[in-house]
Image 1 (cartoon, helix red, strand yellow):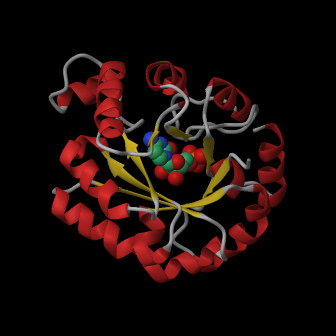
Image 2: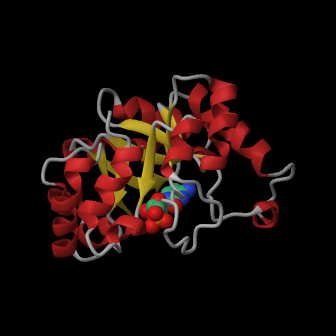
Length: 222
Ligand code: C5P
C-alpha cells in the first residue's frame, strides 16, 4: 500500500501538473486543498493526471449545504474529502450519506494550528486531547470513514477506536528537513509506526530540488 499523500499547495496549475508528474509514481494519493481549488475549481483537478485525489476542502456549514456540496463534487471522482467534525453529527452524517459510494469522508477534529489557549478562546474547555477524542467519536458515530489528525494523536485514536478508521496524518518531516510553520512534527517512520494509514507531506517534497526523488525517499520508509 502506498501511504504517501503529496500535498500540492500552489496556485500555479502548470507547477502543480509538473509536481504531480514527478511524485505520483510514489504516492497513494495527491492532495489538493483550498488554495488550489479556489484558484482553479473542479477543472483544476485534471492536474492529478488520473492519480487518486484527496480533496481537502474542510467543509463546514449546515447539513443541507454540505450535502449539496458533496453531491456537486461527486462527478470529480475524488477518493477522499474532508469535513469539519465541529459542524456536528447531523452535518457529518449528511456528508457521509451524500458521498454514498463516492469519496471517503474524513473528519478534521481540532486544527493543528490551534494550541490549547486558542482552542480555549473558542469556548472549548478541557483541552485539546479531550476535544479531539470527543469530535472523533462524534464523527465516526455519524458515519465518517476516518480522521485527519496530528501524528501525536494517532496512538490515542487507535487505542480509542481500533484499526477501522482511516487515519491521515499531516505535519510530517523526514529527519533533517525544515519544520516551517508546523509545530509538532514526526518523521514518516514514526507516524506509520504509531498507526497512520497515510501521511501527508507538502513542502519537504514540493520545495525539494528534486521532488520526485524526495517523494521516492519518503515512500521507501513509509
Ligand atoms: O508543507 P506541509 O508538509 O506542512 O503540508 C502539510 C499539508 O497538510 C498542507 O496542505 C496543510 O494544509 C495540510 N494540513 C495540515 N494540518 C492539518 C490538516 C491539513 O498541515 N491539520
